Image 1: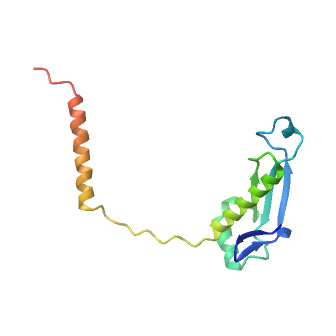
Image 2 (image 1 turned 30 degrees about the vertical axis):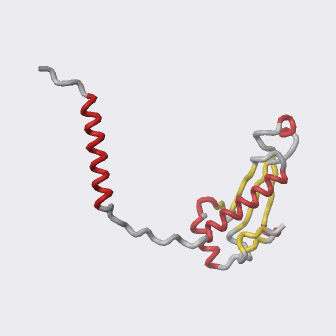
Image 3 (image 1 turned 45 degrees about the vertical axis):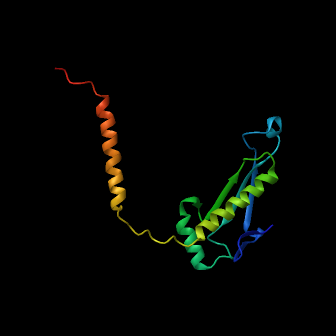
Length: 140
């Protein structure tokens, strides 16, 4: 089953690798007999569907999550292997889409407005007055 990350990018099933193991968590006695935990592998470094700039973008942005150029996603939240497969595919698609998304525009630094500065100082004075009233009165 091919994985559609975006309308422009679809990862073929032949590039995806699966590994299954026993999962911890819910399932009762059934959990000891079924391999419901799913690991999904995708080799970013050798993928044929990525353009060179996309590959470099993913390798730099997702570099900490890659081991030898291979991207690994695990899913063990559900009791059935089928549901965990679907979750793993969705996680991989989300992470790759986020890695290929364009950068956000840079933040333009702004100064606080005069009114917000006044409100800030008024709130500090109010707090100071409240704490001043809590003090023990001076001994005479």
